[in-house]
Image (tube, rainbow, N blue to C red; front, side, top):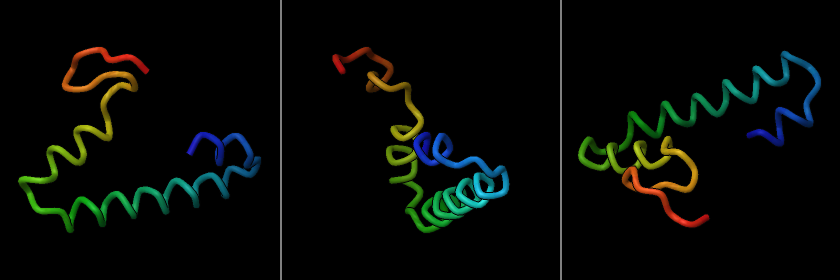
Length: 58
């Protein structure tokens, strides 16, 4: 996503990309079984270089 934002100069175009990504995430969340959501989404929003809160080599 960073590459898209860096290569795009128009604010409206950036908004379109971000909105599309948000819709995909929203759809994925709505269509994922509840017991799988935690592992799917929690890992997606962890700090890079960590797993289960512990530091790992990158």
